[in-house]
Length: 282
Image (cartoon, rainbow, N blue to C red; front, side):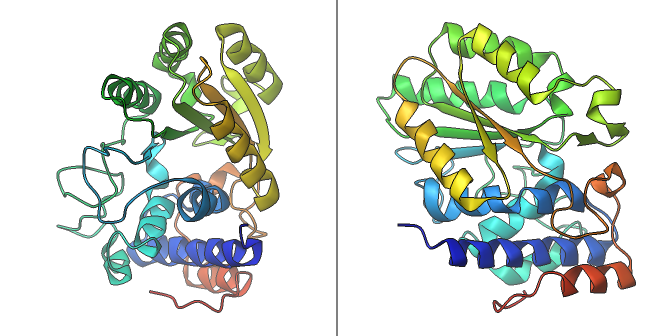
């Protein structure tokens, strides 16, 4: 049984890492990163079968693809705290010659990163390819992907959704971070698709669709385990994850401003004071 308290503690520390990383280089995407910290914690510390020793092929282990690559800080912190590389390397985020680029990249050979995801809209297609490869190789492990709700405005996603259902890619679990915010404002004011509208569309394509609260570990674990139980039954699985950008830092929550703005010294101190942790900062 999962230790919810320990997962919460880990997620809080990951949020601290994110804020300190973005502040140190005065660049990055803190809002979506800390909003997804609970999801990443549950995925890497409880749900996914993975190996921090890392083999690029991902044979006989679950694979994760971060489609919305701009939230790389939460990805890097999770990888480091899962044992993929030393915590001290988080200090190099967005520095010259660092393996921790602003968006995940493969040229730097950072353990845990299997694809460069700076350009939005491609992660689901890549995940489908990996999932089909696993099927061809009789590999029963799963492929997980995370995408953003602004990213769904890219047309390639809809081709991928249709393809996955048509070809019964049932070893694939895609989660969308539905926080309603993107770089230019609220998604509903730009090219928005509501959670219910999205669910209806994916169901019509032939996906299994689940909903979960991305800030409640019981909801996350229950939903992710349900998604796993649905794998291998002829349909890909899609999870609509409700989150709030910047959660739970009060002055960051719910505003697209924090999509890509680094906190200043005072804002960092304020945010960290709201995220007390008994774990060690890097």
